[in-house]
Length: 437
Image 1: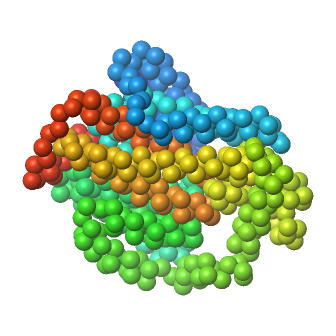
Image 2 (image 1 turned 90 degrees about the horizontal axis):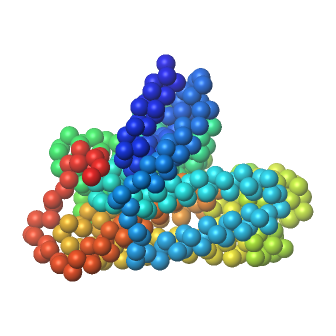
């Protein structure tokens, strides 16, 4: 039944995608973040819904008349340079077949990001995409949070099998990055029922993050929470919520959870921590022999570990860090480009936060830019311990950032500033946020 229902939903959207291709971006995002096909048990489990939707969207995009030309964004050029570099390192990879397989995955993500850049032409389209991300990943935040409460945190929360967020650590990172976007929607809606639902979703997601028992997710949650307090307009309100909720969440979790978190301090006694350190040393050693282009995608193998590992007694593993992952696969040059891309995203949002308040109709952009920065902080902290350099949410946020920069640039070109009124709480209804222009 699930397979049939999902198929009917996706195919039912096809006419709308052809007529309004931005709908295809929303459906593609829903399939990519929620992975509803992985919740099925029959033919839909492996059916290429995302490829189908992407193809239909591209066809609709060809005839789309409201394309926008990206302007005023150095971040776009950083993304282009990074894309070119990972393509070069794929051609020089130690394992060409494995590298090509991973390269195809990142290119598909970047193609979707490109469509966002050219079609997110107004506030409603941007908000609709943010809402789809929140609802898609928020499903696992709600489900995982309820599960954590009902089981008193005794079991780990996992993502859908066979998806990019199947691992508990990956799901923890995804939920950490989604929390600030939930807060953004919370600030944008006026109706009390929507605010209550958004707040309940945030609380449930916080429980789900703890329920994943991801140590990287826990550290990211703490860092991101502190940064959220600094970035939020309602600092005292957010701080009060944190002061009340944090001890309750911490006390609620069982002793097994506290024991696992304690291994952060006593990492020398934790086998998985030593495997991480071994992988990081391996990355540095490999990059010493391949300093420019690295080993390419797929550079983490048992064969190479036998050559470059300094701890042969420790089992080989993946990079367990976005930074060492980039270093081993794309060399010191690739790592530099990756860090510049993250820094470029942060700086682009800082410029929007500074400029958008000049225009009352751009105030929403200031709020979203601040929350994207908070989400980025969560990604960078959790990324210290997770191999998620190809995580699609990061690149979608970059696409949204570039689109926002273009919209703000167009607004500046009007050369007419609208004075900000004393009451700037002209927030759109959730219904308006989910509709396209």
